[in-house]
Amino acid sequence: AQAPLAQPGPAPSHSAARGPLHAPRLRRARPAAEKAAMAGIMGGDDDDHDKGKLMYQESKEFNSEMFLCSAYDNESASRITFEIYGLDTQDMYHLIYDYQNFNSLFRFNAELMNPTKKEGRFNWVIARLKIETLNSKRELKLAPDPTEEVASIPLYETQRKIPTGRMDLNERKKLRESMDMLDIRRAEKIQKRRLEWKQRALKRIMQLKEEDKLRKESVNQKIEEERKLRVKMKEERERREREEEARAEAIRKQRRKKVVEKETSTKEDVQKSYEELRSRWRISDEAAAKTKAEHEEKLERERQSRLEAAQQAQQHALDIQARREAAWAAKEERIRKAEAAKINHIRDVKITLERQAKLRQERNKEFLQLLHSERQPIFHEQLERTREREQAKESEREALENYKEKRAIPKKVNKKGRKRSESVTSERAPASPTSPASPASPTSPAKKGRKKAAPKGEPADTDGAATEGEAPAPPPTGKKKVDTEKVLDAIEAKMRKEMEEARRREMLQKKRDQKVQEKEENRIAKENEHMAHVRADYRQNHALKEEAAAERRLVMADREKEMAATEARQKQDRVRRDREREAKLLRKEQERFARLCAPAA
Image (cartoon, rainbow, N blue to C red):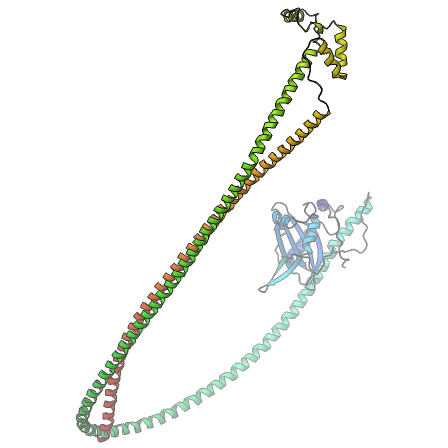
């Protein structure tokens, strides 16, 4: 009985073949009796030692026949063997892999890449096994995809208790007996199917023997009929051959008699014909000599006419060639003149453009010089005024610094330090007691008060300085002076702006002149490049024309040679045809004389 199709699941561990208590269904090593039975089925060929241990079994249908698929692992030889056994025909097929090739099948399979998942790998391979027929030989092959027939695990018991947990002795005994019965039942079924197959084979053999006997009897009967027919045909053929031989002998006798009569009459006729032939030959020789002379005269006239025609044709060809070369020379002269005129025109245009550019550049320079001459006096006056203002500002700044220096409070001296006191004493020693700076002593309270009030109003300081005999400060300017300075500053700013604008325009003019010069250089370079291309094109065209003219001259020379060779060949052909014609006429004349002499003989 067959169970439903096996569902894919996690592959069991490699320890399934350790013992009967922990082995899955039909996944254990074969007993000795089963090995002996299988060896008998295969004709005494026991390969279990080479195949290794039985690791996995499934059942699968190939070509409408159920096969038992087994997987063996030979660790010593590092080899995996897949074996299928036909349950109806007892046919066996093997497919062998070494470990390296077997592992390479699952190199890109993430689920079966682990070598410990052996049963999952065996199920994957069995699902792709197929039987192919090559040259009347059936072989087991591995298909790239699973086949239409799905493998399933064979079940020999419909109900089976799977041992879980701890078992007592009775349960273990029952389990062992049930597992042993599986092997016994399998051996019985194998023996039963073998006997059925042998009976069918014997019945088929007897049927084939009967058919062979009938076929041999029919063949012998046909052979005997054909032998009798051939004997009859041979006797008929020999009779016809004897009749034909007698008839041929009578014909030969009659022919020999006629031949003798014919030879006698022929000799007489030949003698008479020779006499008539000699007389006709004399007449024909005279006529032939006359005809030949006329023919030679005619050929000479034709040859003279052909020679004159050839000379005229050659002279005509020379005239045509001379006119053609004159036309070519005139055309080349026209082209040369046109190209020279074009080049002269280009040169004139170039000279005109250069002269215009030079005039334009000179006008620009004259205009810039005029602007420079008109602006220079204004710039010079402005620069003079600027220097005067800077000198006035510098003198005012110096007067202010002198005033501040005279009115400034002396620095506080650290008198506690020995070195500092010595330096201060050495500095004050050269000072005169009548120095005007004596009233500015730091011990004077009035001076100290004035120093503090100085930042708030300069007029007070100015008055104090005047009373103490110091140099008077410049008087206050007033509103009119401030406005003049603003006007001067505005004029200076304006002039500076104009000067900046002049410098900017000068820089722009320089850039413009530089760009104009660059453009002029680029134009000259492009023009030179263009003229170089024009000269190269002209040289190339001239070279092409020279080559074409040389090629035409070569073609005309080759044509003249071909015409001369053709004429010589035609002359030889005419001479050969004349000889053939004369020989043919002579042969026909001789045949005609022979025919005329034959009746007379």
